[in-house]
Length: 275
Image (cartoon, rainbow, N blue to C red; front, side):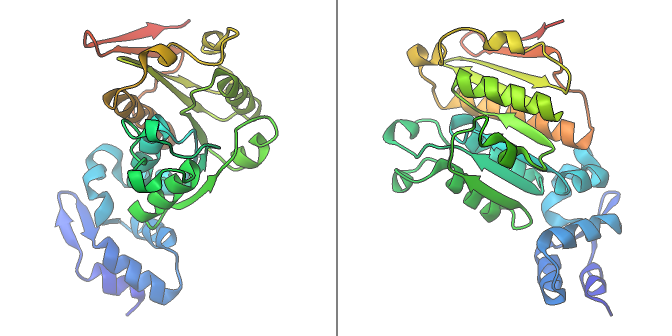
């Protein structure tokens, strides 16, 4: 009896899918010398769903889960938006995550940043995000790069990346990210927050409709006046993750050539057509 046979022997029917314990799968794979990701991919390819993903099947299906496990996403900025985006992408099962942020946690981050705790003040945001992603999902390969995203670091960061998620708070860095993704044909999910307001959009290769929103001399936006309460980054990060997962799996439609504008003060969601 093979290692896989010992796992599927106790498979459980859950609707149209056959579910196996991801913990039992991991134990058997380790004895066989396989990585958790290799085991989960093999499992899905042979018609069985690891238990940790069973609640995603009705939406993403086994084919979508396979695409996620075989994908790589870069999360640029690991603060209020990026910390939660990374958490959600790890739970979704994106196989490789690259976290980029040159900053460390400080006291002002505690009100809204998922990864910020009193014990982690002074610690690297990017490395903390990577460590948490692998704690959440042992099949995920994650690395944290404590550096600024710029034209010098972009090549190493974006190599082999299928998708980038913009979680930046600097217009200068955001302009560089847009340009570097465009030159490499990498799809980009962009999000921004300020007080009660937020926005989310998707930039596909060859699309420049969002570029005009990055114009201006100031490096920051109105968030310097409004600040950011805890709920706005959580909402926008979730919307960014949804766009990322749809792009990677091919499920649903995305906000290409559009901007979803959110005003939580008046509970208004407006989809703006940019072209």
